[in-house]
Amino acid sequence: MNALEEVFMAKRMKGIGLLPKLLLGISIPILLAILVVWILVFSSWGIWGTPFGSLKDIGADSLKELSAISLKESQASLDRLGEKIIREKALDVAFQLEIFARFHPRFRKEDLVKDPYLKEIAVQKVGETGYTAVHDTQGINYFHVNPKIVGTDLHQLADRLPAFWKILEASFKGPVSGYYDWKEADGRIRQKYMSLAPVRGTDLIVAATTYIDEFSRPARALDGRMKPVVASYLDHFHIRVQMFYLVIFLDIVIFLMVIYFYSRSVIRPIRYLSEVADRISMGELDTPIRIKASGEVGVLAASIQRMQTSVKAAIERLQKRRETREHRETYPPQRDAGEPRA
Image: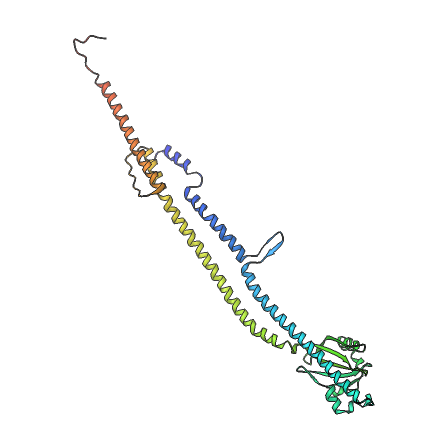
């Protein structure tokens, strides 16, 4: 290849070739589609300030949220059931004391603590560890599960248990219920629920109280059993997601390799025909066209072959004409002796 041919070929090689164009034309739309799916499934995104979680995160978060909501709703339902049980217990004991007071109209309040039967009515179990107690509108306790508290003035608890005293003080005016914190011997703070109901016809008030978590304990136990199950599921879910990442990555690699080799198989005959056409244009008219292809490439090969034949025929005709002219110039035709001159 001479200098002129090299310059000609260098000009033609500028820019992006057919193979890169074909690769980009096929790969980019599909890769963009994969990217969009990837963003939707595996990435968090937003539009105009509105966040959208990925489907992967939504799936995991939904399971966690469902588990948390289920536990919360279960605990709330059991807590409401516990509140109802405590209120009904206070009302039930108050009604029993009311009946006792009706049948003992001359019974003095000072003698209440001396009646063992009345104590059985006044102090009853609530839940697992709770109990009922009785005090009057002056804050004096008459019945309690702890004998040391019987006869004491409950006003002394106002500073030590302000939340408890707030509920108790409100009971002097009518029925009331509420929560207060109770400090255990080991320092733990547990929440108690207390309901107070007046005994009609007297100045006595029944208080029913217990730890509210006694009622929601089954829900917490269920949560304890559910957490390992949810954690195991999430672990398997994340493993599957990672496997999906790996499969997608391998698919993309294989896909790009297939596109590359397929594009090369499409471009190879075109490059070959281009080289053949270049060689023919440079005068190598006997260059063989060894290609077996159909479709547009076959048509192109046949066209180049016809062009090759036509160029060879044209050159042969030109050569014959030149040889004939040279022959005539070298050997001009002889005139006869008797032929007159022009």
